[in-house]
Image (cartoon, rainbow, N blue to C red; front, side, top):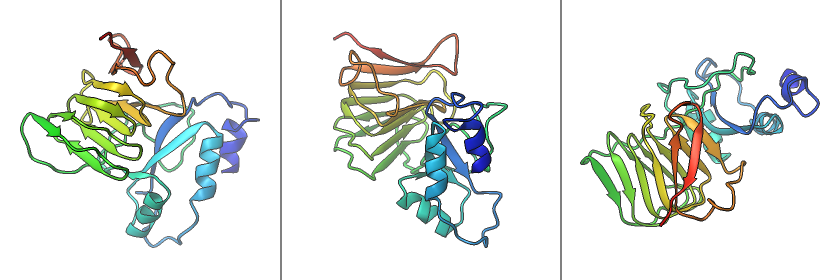
Length: 220
């Protein structure tokens, strides 16, 4: 952690390298019998370096349980890298994708009619997801296709979860904790501009740059 702070901390040589980038901490290379240690100091250091830890993967049951207690989500081991910085610090393995899978067979479009409370997670496998009620802070919605929220979106929304760069997220009231298209993220650590926050808006990837996330107001 000292090396991380030395290079990417406020006084480090590359203090502006990260811009509140979301990351997953990978424990798959750590022996499952390794002594249990406190993750809080590590999370503090990551945030000081302008990184936003959002998930953990490849951890043993005790480590995973602890990570969930700290507010992280579980990311599947098979998630692939979509973005890479050559000089990025190695925290076991850091990637820009978070997918919490709930296997729900269904039609081409999954429709959710009830509000989603904190801690609830929905995954529309192989389909679009339509939510007709509020997605509260702490709730998480994921779809392989597009996501439509005809109510306030205040939790996490991840469209194109299997790599569809043409997927989009739509909401009548855009106030998310995190939005993602095909693994490219933006969190609430970087506030939305006033003409978008709380307004009808869509999230998509730039046609010219698939690593650039665009959030645009929709005229009604």
